[in-house]
Length: 304
Image 1 (cartoon, helix red, strand yellow):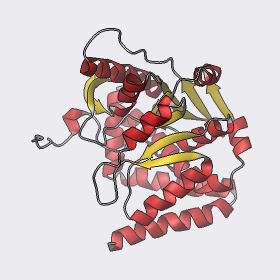
Image 2: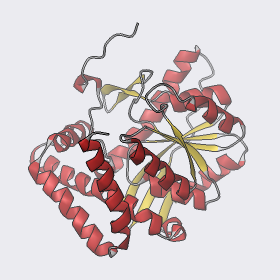
Image 3: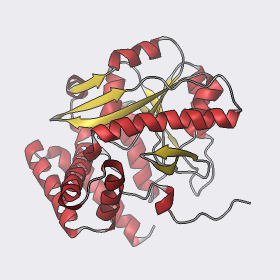
């Protein structure tokens, strides 16, 4: 483990150990202050957030700067809540979540089909997970393997305690963890999976149009729906005052015609369209501090 890895792991450990015991208003003030310091320094992550938000909203100048400040505050609220979530009352989280289309989601799950909930990086999706579990539906998710390994294990333990089954995206040391096979089993058993999908973390992403530009999004949700007959349901999330909001979009239907690849592309595009709608409504709660559009990415080496 490198020194940087040890520092990162220690910071998260302190966060989980300390923040939950700090009064909520004090913790909120401190994390908002951290966001404002980051915003004023305007490092690479803040510049990338502003670039992404400019593509989404068309804003520029002072208007864009104010939006990025709200975005940083939203992002740091997410981290504050992550550190406090183990001590928060899950019933209170459920009660303070405004689920637009929640009845539709419950009805879809009750049909007995598997349901793939596809999510962008918005709001607090862990709190949304608490809402789903408290609604009676534990679920399976996939998580990118973090460094150091102790940090990854800590996140797995945190999310398992909430009620999630967490599958690693890769094995320790790299390589496929066969997460897709496990997810397919869960879908055929009529279970629920929640998959962040607005970034391509693999080499198999699907190109889509997103706010008028080309990007790649994860192929997993579309492939699961196509292979298992599960419903592909995009959900967008935001912070709703002191609580949380989520918008359940209509199921993306599997195309009746076309090759397998063409169907996957159309399903993924439908998912991207739903994300676009939700992000346009709540751009300050979209936490995309990384390169996303193909025009911004470094060229990839061609695969053999």
